[in-house]
Image 1 (tube, one colour):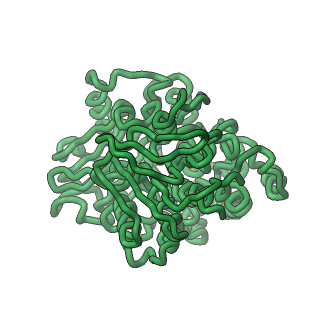
Image 2 (cartoon, helix red, strand yellow):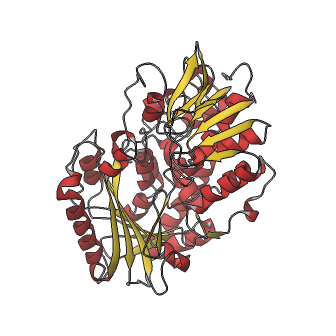
Length: 491
C-alpha cells in the first residue's frame, strides 16, 4: 500500500462530508493535529438538512445501513455510537409495491422474511430466498476484508484465494442473472436487484459482486436516527470537535499549494494560507482535482444516473405505507435503458418514497407528515435537459400524479411545502454530471480501477468520498475515510 511519507503531524481535511469526518476522527485518534475546513455552515456535505416552515428534510441519503461503521469512527477517539445517536431499526426495511396491487415487505430477519415470502409468493420462492441470503452473506464475507475495506493500488492487489472464490460464486457474472437463479417471481426478482442503481448500473448490466448492496439493504438491517440522517454528520462533527479537531465552517478552500511532489497547505477564499503536512480532499473527485495545480482529473469517468427529489411537507398521512416504500412501474428493463442508455425520463417510473415522520414525528409540525420522493433520471452528461426552464416543476407534477395513481389519494391537495431538486441543482453544488451518486461502478471503475484514495503524483494528497475507493453509499464513504487515514497514518 502506498503511504504518505515524511511528517504527517498536521493534516488539513477539506470538506466535512461523511468521508471527511470519518477520516478526521481516525486521524485524531492517531494523534494527528487535524483542521477540517467546510465551505458550508453545517457538516454533512451531501448528507445535509433543509429546514422549511417547521419541516426538517434530509437532503441526501435516507437509508442507513451498517451503523457499526459510525461506531468504528467514533471509537477511534474513544467515543461510542450510543452516546451520540439514537437509532431505530426499521421493520420492514422497505415495503415494495407492485403494479398488480400486491406488496411485499423487506424484513431483515431471514426466518420472518422467508415466512412472508412463502405467504405472498409461495414456498418455493421462500426456499430460494433462504439460499439467496446464504449466497449474499458469503459474497459479503469474501469481499469485505479482501477488497472493500482495503486500499488497492494496482490490479495485482486483487490476486488472492478470495478472488478465486468470488469468481467461483459467479461474482463477475451479471447481477440480474444471478438473482434469477434463486427467484422465479418477478416481484422478488425486482426487490433484490433494484439496488444496482445505487451503483449506477441497470441490474442486467451490473456485476453480481454488487449484490452486496442487497445484503446491506435487505439482510444486515436498515436504521433511522432520531433527527434524521443529518444527525449522523452532526454526531461525527461533535465528537471530532470534542477531541481536538479544529472545524472551520463557512470557509471555502480555493487552492492547494504545492512544492515539488508535495502539498504544503491550502488557500482559503479570503487569501489565508493554512499549512499542512498532508491534505485530504473530500469534494466530489473532479472538483477536488480542480483545487490542485495541473490540468485536473485526466481520466474521463462514466457517471451514475442522477435523480429528481421532491421534499414534501404535507397534511396527508397514509396508514398503509412504511418508512421506506418502493413503487415499481410495470416496465422493468426498459426503464433502466431509458434513463441510462437513451437519456430519457422513465415512461413508467419506479420511485422511492421515504416517510420519515412515520418513525420520527418531530421532523414535521404536529399532525403533519414529510415525504422524500426520489425518481432516477439521466445525468447531465447523458442528457443535458432544461431543468431550469419549467421541466423541474412539470416533472414534479407528473410524479405527484403517479403517486396519486398508486394509492396516495389526495397527495397533491395535502402539499404545504414542496422543494424540487434536479440534476441542475446537483451540478450547481459542484457534483460532476449533475449526479449525487458519483462515478458508476462499471468493471473499469471498480476496485483498483476506481480512482485511488491517494494522488498519483502528489505524495501527500489523499482523497475521500464516493468518487474514490471503495465507492458509493454511506458504508462505503465511511470506509473510504478510514482508508484515507490509513494512507497518512501508515497502518
